[in-house]
Length: 136
Image 1: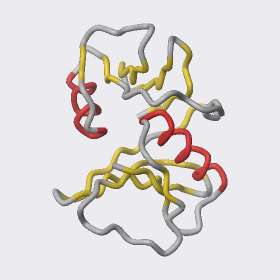
Image 2 (image 1 turned 60 degrees about the horizontal axis):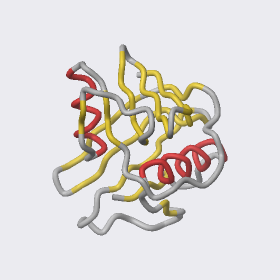
Image 3 (image 1 turned 180 degrees about the vertical axis):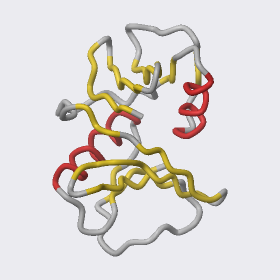
Image 4 (image 1 turned 90 degrees about the horizontal axis):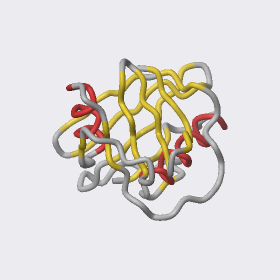
């Protein structure tokens, strides 16, 4: 899996794409005129009027859309290469785990990197600190 943007992205979309890739511990690709080769899963950051508004997951199985509103700016900085776990008690959290191709757990671990899903909101947390949040 890798994260990229649509062609000619805004600076906000690039920053969000880099932050998401770092959080998921996957590569970020400056897309330019590259196209997917068909083998990999791509998460493409889509935007509306210069603001990130969704992710399109492109894979051999097809395309899926996760629409959201970014709440605040993602925290900058390097992260260790940890794979996050999706937590939450709703069926929505299982769907998010499937979208990001990550493991799901109903019990949060405050020391781990987690994607916490609850009531239309996704919090991307690393060691208890929220890196960024999305409203679904």
